[in-house]
Image 1 (cartoon, rainbow, N blue to C red):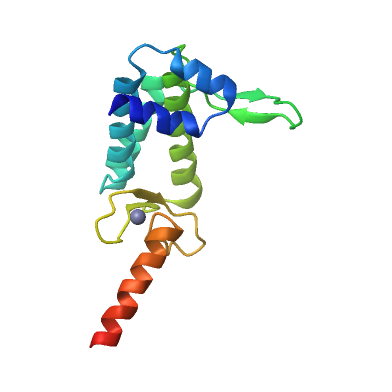
Image 2 (cartoon, rainbow, N blue to C red):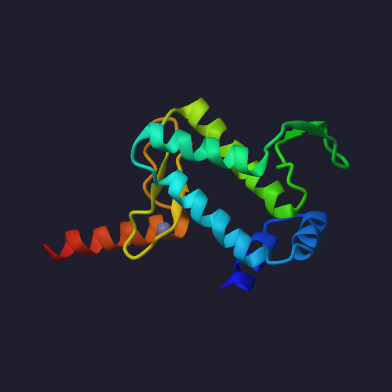
Length: 153
Ligand SMILES: [Zn+2]
């Protein structure tokens, strides 16, 4: 499971970050731990519990804002963690991203996909907070199932 998790994270990263991640010993186990923390923060029922979990992640991964200029892009803000490895970097970025979403959109913007047998978690950035599914595939699957149910009744 650890290697799959590293591969899944690595697929979303640029070349430098991917190389840095593969150099982290026990990256799989540490990413699994990070994934559990993210899920618990995302699915916390009470806003105060959610905020406490996100704050704990910000502290744990040592998230620090700093400006970065990538090739061909203007300066932009990163929140890499300060623990030294790519796992801390990712943890800091994720924790800060969740904090910014709670700050900008309010609580209740995270949830578990409501499609049958999908355990993915979604982040709802719609204007009216109407998201219920993790992505286009689950949305289409759920609509098809609802259509079939209506036709049968
Ligand atoms: Zn889904």
